[in-house]
Amino acid sequence: MPEKEKKKLDLKIREMPKQHEDIRRQNFDEVALGYPANIAIEEAIRCLQCKKPKCVANCPVEIDIPGFIKCIAEKDFALGTKILKQKNLLPAVCGRVCPQEEQCEKGCILHKKGGAVAIGRLERFLADWEATQGEPPVPSIPPATGKTVAIVGGGPAGLTVAGDLINLGHDVTIFEALHEMGGVLIYGIPEFRLPKAIVKREVNYLKKLGVKIVTNYVVGKTKKLDNLLKEFDVVFVGSGAGLPWFMEIPGENLNGVYSANEYLTRMNLMKGFQFPEYDTPIKNHKRVAVIGGGNVAMDCARTAIRLGADEVQIIYRRSRDELPARLEEVENAEEEGVVFHFLTLPVRYIGDENGWIKEIECLKMELGEPDASGRRRPVPIEGSEYIIPMDAAICAIGNNPNPLIPDTTPGLEMGKWGNIKADEETGKTSKDRVWAGGDVVSGAATVILAMGAGRIAARSMHEYLTSS
Figure 1 (spheres, one colour):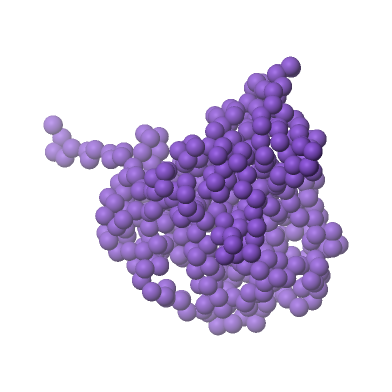
Figure 2: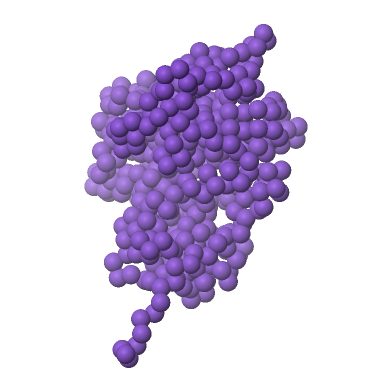
């Protein structure tokens, strides 16, 4: 026998406690409750501390993942937090909403054996632990460079650029169109998945670093981007993708047919779920259909459940295997009573005599050959039409960037879907001294990818500012 037996791999991922479905259906409190310290330590000990960690290579913002996990295993939470925040100023957000299973955790060497370390949960643990320790320490900022930066949009990409550049000594101002900062974090993702107090906490940290914030400021209307270029040395555009897609089928103008943007903005930014405490009235629909299969569709369906709907159905044109939503979001939705109609396509909304939706005509589909996305293309089955009674339909099939900035900015090259064209390696646009990143470039994507694009742009912007 060998002198020292190999340590047996621990493939058991520690489960994170969450509210029971019977309870959480009745409230908007956070569903996932986070690791307690003892469970976080157990999970962290599972990390193999690889010499060439693929988890880091798969992280869009380059976090030292083994480094902060080792600190948790050694119970040095303060150092772990410091390591984590060297690369990520939004760890409490990313630990909750980023698809780690498709990024860092997919690179974990244990992934092939079905037991990847729960990196996202450990990231959340450190961020939440820090919040219990009082005001976080603010790092010393380098001497002012005298260079000025304007950031259009206070979402994940803009917040990342702001954090990176303020820490390099530049003067940074964010211009946000809405009355609160956070972009999709504040208007799109529901409270039960991302409490808004967490977003505000992360934004306040940037303020303490010296970032200036201007809200209710619509670049393209309040002031054009060219005017900002007269006042600032460089501009970053991170205005997101807030223009909803519709299916362009009959009946979309009926009352009770919503875009996911409108529905979620009413609930989240405008606090509709707290009516009448907040002055945002909502209609209590009883039979709600959500069109789409992504995380936004799950957010809409689970919100409708909490607002008292008797029946909520997801209508998705492909099969369960092609669902783009995170597995845990799909599982949460099913636990809460959401019903899924796969291989189904709405073709018409039918209204009553008062102009309200009362039914949806659907068509059954079958999967054909893969399309450009790599997923098998849904093909209609002739003669398979049928009717579903519904009093609300929420369209959650995607978004494009709002055309306001491109339409008011000469010289800004655009893609065919209305996105701003930007160099993948630098974030530079066709317009001098203007960078862009996040959903306004890529189309609707994940929070962490937007942050990664912001980091790339910030690096290029700093290089320009220090060489000009």
